[in-house]
Image (cartoon, rainbow, N blue to C red):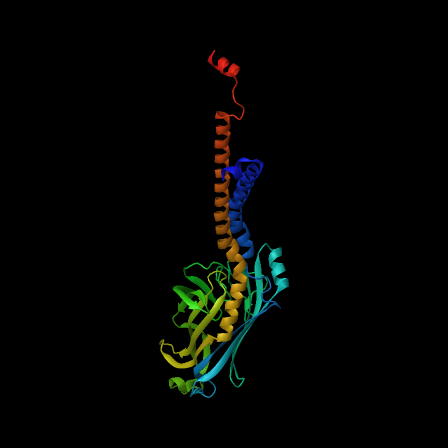
Length: 346
């Protein structure tokens, strides 16, 4: 080491090691705190062609027909729920002009039976901050054609990057308000250690319907009854990107009389993401998360390790060169003459 660091090349290598080491130490926080926030954003227009689709399948165990006052679900009915989301580039530009970094999306949510019978359909438009996924009121956001306040709620399409282990204000598109989802813990989904969140709510009134009077023993042809809705929702989220890898929903709607007693169950349905959908979500999360993990975790760690290593090499080189210089001063190459010695002792 002494031989390689004491010459001209040694001096150059020492300086190079110190300079590169310092640059790497500076690069570590730059990658984590400046580059990562730029990369950690959902696409302005989601999907390669601007589309995202989430498919769930399940069964209906109860389906009540208000017109006939009869239940049509004697046996479980298989259903497919398809949520198709399309990004609105013009809406995102409108948000940017207003100083909001948001992705604007339009979604159609359809639930059909195996024979094509439409059970439910809804459309909604959301604007969500591309990093925090907090909903904002801009760009014509609406649910079913009705403008509702959303600011402060969390997007139901995906959670924030580096999802925190704390309750999430998931915006319920039926109740039109945020519903708290509790963090349950980690669980493996397709090889990813996902974050499990769960929402356990109580039945909530969502309107009044005119139901057959026979349901409550009334001679009147119809009577007003309160329609209630409750959903037990569980989602598994990629902790880096916030992408929902899998979700399960258990929905129950009922009619309630003025005393608060449930008269009849209108709908009882359970749906879950298909295995193919889970695989697609896992692949998407890995593709999006890989570069961010490098700038947030792997890259800064590698930069610090290499930087400290190079600085150590550089400092060793400085020490070796300093010691070599002292040796040359104490033991010069040219021997002292008799005249030099005499002058030293005079």
